Amino acid sequence: MTSVLNRSVTFSSTASEGASPHAYDAGLLLVRVVLGLTVAAHGAQKLFGWFGGGGLDGTGQFFARSGYPAGRTMAVIAGLSETLGGLGLVLGILTPLAGAAVLGTMINALAVKWGGGFFAPAGVEFEVLLLAGAAGLALTGPGRIAVDRFLPGLRAHRLVYGVAGVLLAAVLAALVLLVRN
Figure 1: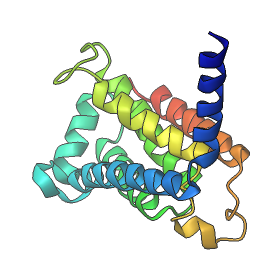
Figure 2: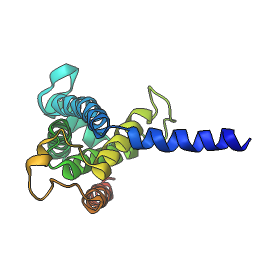
Figure 3: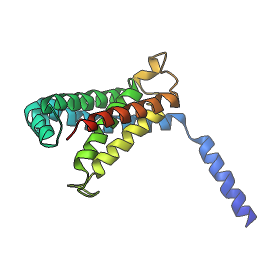
Figure 4: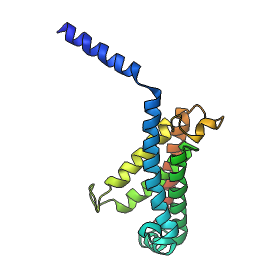
């Protein structure tokens, strides 16, 4: 029994020590690109009506029906947050802020869709996944395959940047929800 335990401990410590930092960077890049492009496409639906979206007029009407004042203005804010936040995640530029933009938008999306259960099509599973991914990227940073690597202040991602981004998103999303009827 002791030898099995020792082999188990040795294997797990060897596996974690042998993991390549490049594997982590590649994994973060994959998550950033898929999540970022998905969110940016949703923003383009709101702003430009691309990909079958409602554009500013249709999205503005949706926001007004959902209890937000100045529906068209809210459509612009949500569309820009999704488009720029998503593209920021793809590029890995100002990642804590890009993650915060997506996170804040998803908090509002959850508030609008809440009550439809968890699973699609009426549920919030998609929004929860995007929210968790954006928060995770804000907290972990973009990895080394990112524009942030070339920005002196963000070269070495700090947890405090991610926490600040998550807190900023939560506070701004809460303020926007306060103006919602």
